[in-house]
Amino acid sequence: MENAQRLDAVFYALSDRRRRMLLAELAAGPKSVGELAAAVQMNISAASKHIAMLEAAQLIYKTRQQRQLYCHLHFDVWREVANYIGMHAKFWSGRLDELAAFIKETGAN
Amino acid sequence: MENAQRLDAVFYALSDRRRRMLLAELAAGPKSVGELAAAVQMNISAASKHIAMLEAAQLIYKTRQQRQLYCHLHFDVWREVANYIGMHAKFWSGRLDELAAFIKETGAN
DNA sequence: TGAGCATTTTCCATATTAGGAAACCATTTA
DNA sequence: TAAATGGTTTCCTAATATGGAAAATGCTCA
Image (cartoon, rainbow over all chains, first blue to last red; front, side, top):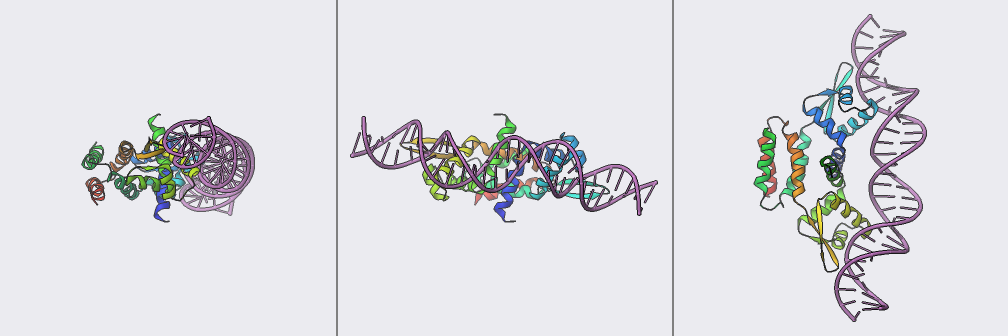
């Protein structure tokens, strides 16, 4: 996939609150599709589709454990997003150190 | 607007390549709606709608100069996005400093 | 091999989005 | 005030996204 299209997919995937909730669940550790569906109170079919979208955007990946498919955050893609955000932060006059510090600090808690 | 909805709007706005191109144009400085439309080769009606979407997401704001409406990046919203990204970077095991450095470095070029 | 669980895919109905053209509105200038 | 410029909104059409139910698939175990 071309870079611009990847970014389209990533941002589009992030534009839905429930998909962000799925990611938040995964931030605590891998979960199966069924567990995720239950966690965000979606029927399994809908959840599966949202999860497929996150997977297509390469925000997550799946591994099989017996009958269940476990979803994991695919951290590398955040770099791409951070890159985009960073490029704009470049023009964020005089706030660059502040931004880096902010992210560091947010990550530290 | 509720925070989650703002984030929906921001990410949705960022999910279109041409809208990102509009933002990139604005990164170089304010431009009128007409100038932006020309820069990204869109008809003015379509451009106006995309620009309205960026404005609704508070990624940009407009000021009037005579007959023209100038669009400006609204930098503050990047903080919100950075916050979201940062929250996830938190789980980006062992790569936190790397991320901060990366953003700093990207911004520095 | 058959039964059953976990998930995906298909199908269908509904809803939302995007683009172009034309009408419309606001501001400036003759 | 009329005309022109810069943008926005409306209207219509085509395309796409979403949800639920049911059928289909993949894997595991008896």
